[in-house]
View 1 (cartoon, rainbow, N blue to C red):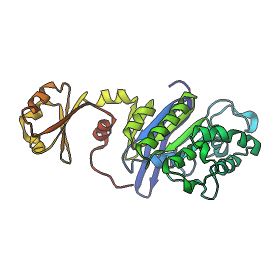
View 2: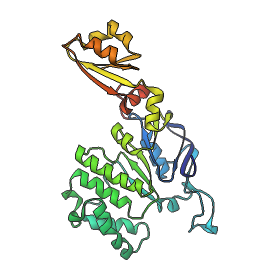
View 3: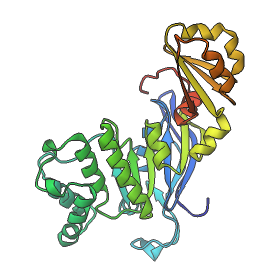
View 4: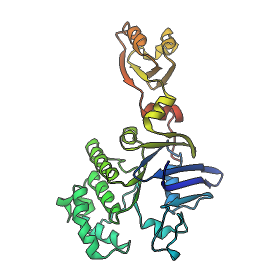
Length: 320
């Protein structure tokens, strides 16, 4: 990586006897979106909280914005360190958390105005930014509405607009589209793509693999607090998976687990009533399955969901 805007090195965190983040290191370059994926309890949110100075790490370092920083003693050249330089770091961060933190008593305009004041911005400066922020969030027509009058998608877009009030260099987004319907998610993705085109950097945690593939230039896969894979989405798929997947379901699908058809695939897995065949060439398998008309099949290329399930398993995790 060329110039890192943000770097985490050797990060560790335990709660009692449970290690939640275990020797985690990664970096984000300027203009890059790094996605963090992993099952429940993998350490994603704890990592974000440490990056924000909300949870103290047991070990490791968190560095931001190398280069000449104004507003610090001596106009220093060193990177900023969390939590030592928390105020200077947060002045250049935008944050959208999982939980809605909008003030229900304020209108959309007022939410942006009050939030801007937290950064020491003058009212005139904030007010000059509000129209463009509301337009960016497609909320111009809702400027006077309170959050309780907004849909879930509108609230998430307002949270994103609020995170941009200080024109941050880096955005930390913790599952920003959870709970949204498909239309609202797609609109949120469109807005995040615009920010990336403008040169913003984004750290994104998500459970949506299609979201990760659309937005992220690189992915970090966590499990049990450790990094188990890192790289570009398509590169990771090529490294860890066979190119073709055939899903088979319907009456008798599970019988295939003990049939000769297994030899036509490099790997076979079961999830519920569906059997997944992972193969270098699906044609012989599809031809053989054609002799079982009671079965239904779906032939598709391997994707990030397959990668996620191979690396972290198919068993449902409880939140940890």
